[in-house]
Structure formats: structure tokens, C-alpha cells
Amino acid sequence: MTDPLTPLLDLPGVADAVAAARDAVFQVHRHRVNLRGWATTAAEASVRAARASAALDGGPTAIPSDGSVTEPVLAGALRVAEALGVVLPTWQRAPMQALARLHVLAAADLGGELGRPRAEPGMSERLDMLGTLVTGGTSVPAPVLVAVVHGELMSLAPFETANGVVARAASRLASIASGLDPKSLGVPEVTCLRRQNDYAAALHGFSTGDPEGVTRWLLFWCEALEAGAREARSIADAATP
Image (tube, rainbow, N blue to C red; front, side):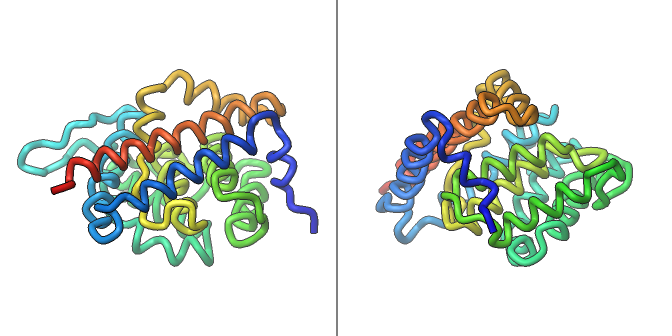
């Protein structure tokens, strides 16, 4: 069968951007702190990612000093972040079940139907196609697959609520499962928050399916991966004795 994502590598600048993103993430895994103490970096990265993701969906970034988070968007993002390790095996064999679980966690305090995609024409087919890609239906470099997972879920907005938190969490799962960022050290979500207008515009470009728009999204996401690796490096540097 023809790999449906292979043509994306021929888009202008994409192959070089993918290589740079992969190298940046690889290098942060080689940071001397992360060779043994990577769990500390991963824990901090997880919280930063959740806070940024919540803010992108309209929630706050600040966690109360007593640790009790009642704001529903941030609480959902933190629940999702905490559960990624548990959800990962399901993602690897049944991605749609994993998405349903992520939505239940993300939207538990937001109301509406939990874990069930909206019944719109073509929704089920596109989600099934995405699931096929995630479970071995493509051999493109991991940054491309992760970008497609992120972009497609944002474009589809399959649930009534919390689609942004779910999509960004799914992109972290895809990064782990694909081997791009197996220890989940990177924090590309921070760049998405800092460059919200660019993020939204790039996602819109992807949603059009136009080659120029798809290129814009792939390049943006590779830049976010590089910046996320720098964020991870700053976390590791701060932990250096």
C-alpha cells in the first residue's frame, strides 16, 4: 500500500525541518542529567505542558500554592498529563479508545457527553484513518506523524469540549510511541502558547489541505519541537548539581 504521508516530505523545507527537530529532541535526551535523572525533567515538562495546553483552551496557567486545582480546564489538563503513561499502551493498540479516555479525563468538569466523538459525516472515517496511521500505517519520520496527529485532531474537533487539550496530549503520546521523545522530555506546548497567533494560523493552514497550508503547519510544529527541546534542556540545566 502507498504510504499516504510520504508526499509530505517533499514539501518545501519539511525534510530539513524534520531532521533538525529530531536531532534537537535526541540531543536533550543525551543531556547528562537526563541520562539517569530524566524522570525529574519529564515530571516538570509534564506540568509545564499541561499548564500551557490549558491556557491555550482558555484556562489559567497558575497552580494554587496548596496544589488544589478547581478550575475545570486546568484540572482536566493536569489529569490528562498524569495519566499519559497509563494510556500509552492503549494508544499503541487502540488509539480511538485512548482518545476517548483522554477526553473523559480532560472534560470531566466541563459537562456534555464524555468520550464519544460527535456524530458528523465523515468523522468516524477520518478518525479510523488516523488510528491506522498511528498503529503502523505510515513509515514517515516521527515529527511528521506527530504533526499530523495534532493537526488532524485539532481540525476535526471530534468532541464537544476539550479538543485542544486532547489533541496536544495525543501528540505527546505519538511522540513517545513513535520513539521521537520516548521519555516525554520536550515541551512544544509552551511555544504554541507563546506564539498563539502563529499556532492558530498554522493549524488553519493544515485544515485547508492546501499544500502551502500543510507546509506551514509542518514547519511550525518542527520549530515547536526544537523550542520544546530547548525548554527541556533548561529544566535539565536547572537540575544540574
